[in-house]
Length: 175
Image (cartoon, rainbow, N blue to C red):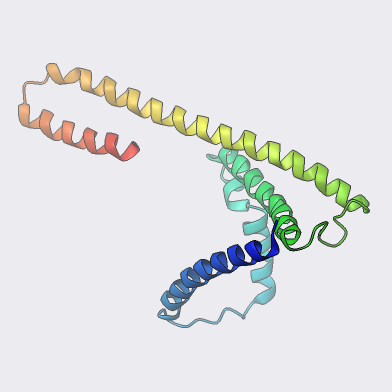
């Protein structure tokens, strides 16, 4: 890729990102100040366990399967981020690679294998998430349609109207 074009794209992307971050930092600076440096060891431990380990998502018994899928998607995108960094570098210099991740290193070959596995995993997990979402919405829509079948029996028109309004709001919120 042309380094000049890559530089222009990078400058535009960083400008958009910077503007968004400035707005968010201004919003955060309006809040009450707090000491974020205290308990640094505990905070780093929690970051590793909760953010990188995805403990909250995987630890919930009720949502464990979706949590595991989400965790694999997260880890997959972390691995794919390394590939993106390599591609950015190759936009400026042909043959660029991050240290120890080139073709000359064993770690580079292991990374390529892991990247391919995680790409497949992200695709599969994305499809599982979409299927699960469609399945749960289908069940909700089916329950809604079944509830509509009882309206002809009810003689209280105002009660039916209020139930129909509530059901319509619930139905519209799914779509």
